Length: 190
Image (cartoon, rainbow, N blue to C red; front, side, top):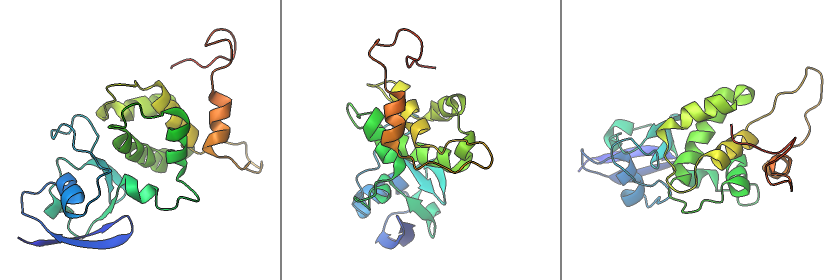
């Protein structure tokens, strides 16, 4: 079996794998990174989404050997610093609550990719479009979309100083008001 060498979550990693080993299997079995889930094995559900050289890919259709020498970022890489959790993790904790948790790692990695590529231009329509390849079978998408938008940087007028912001601040602004979704200012899906 050939050795495969990758940089995973900022650290060089090396392990043996058969030529037909998928990246999701390599991460889970050879490297012990269980945060990336294998759901459908047909690139339909997105539970296996990781960042490969900075872009979201479904690791169930990428051969580990094809990723030789690449940089891979998994959900575990976002949670290395417990004192300062990644903004996307904070937002998912505040909004999504992961009823079953199976889709969350893939959703989180897709969100990181979206935010890095779109920055302040990220909007609801873009998030909805880009989440088409990630399925959530138990919670729906409303809170996932809210979490992604809360983690994204915000637009500000020229010359204004940015206010310190974290996902909890954003969550407080977007929480439904006591009118339970009715009336002006209530949060609505879409």
